[in-house]
Image (cartoon, rainbow, N blue to C red; front, side, top):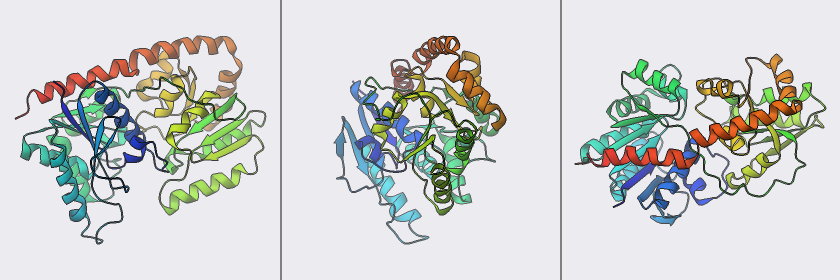
Length: 377
């Protein structure tokens, strides 16, 4: 008999439904991939999301989606309690799951822990970045929400981390253990190409300041004979919108640089199809970029400042740099050394299949949830 599993992912509805929205985060993508896999395995899967105008309890790919509040609903200073907490709590009851899963540090972590303890259910928290497990870097804007998160992390029945680095942070900072389950990827159909001539260097993400997109433009300026493509829209907020506007201004002056802007998630894969190298410029505390997995699914090496658990170096999946001055030579080597590239493609295929294919990761989540569900009550 299948389990009842609920994913609490307030921003996930557009990704589940395949609709376009500028903000598509890696945490939402991962939860949707895992949820759809579990639904195909015969489990009763539900999601709790914000209200994007969809009917309540709509079914998508075998998943029931319970809606909560609209982002703009409620009166300032009061909306935290109503309609946000009240609508989430009601949706949790409607989901009636054995196990509830939530990813990324936030107020919701504490609310889930409180609900599950009160109703005899099990709660799994999953980290989405190194910062989630570092009190000095966690991206939570106020003390109230941090207290909710701190309570939830300590009371969760299980904690999942993406990397060994995150597991060490969990042990060192919160004094509890967890289980490392790497991010999964399932993309049996690589989709249509984007229409751009292939062979370019690719950067894909929402343009946020901490992802340092300007470093990619700097690289294009230093390598005028190489084509560069950037895919991603602006993040929310005036400061982040200014980041995008600055990139847009600089891109117009570069004949070898193409800024595509926002692309709906279902179409993003087409841009990877034509890439020769994928570049990541994020600060070295990101979680585990989905762009790595999209690249490695196609045998494409990555050039990155951020190397989770040193896997890029250890398994030779691309190149790692520590500063902008190292970027041009590292990129030139990845582009021009054909023998090294063929060896790297073999490394990438072996590593991806062993560590990130859904056929490997899906059963680990099923075992975790099954062990917890057996203890429900």
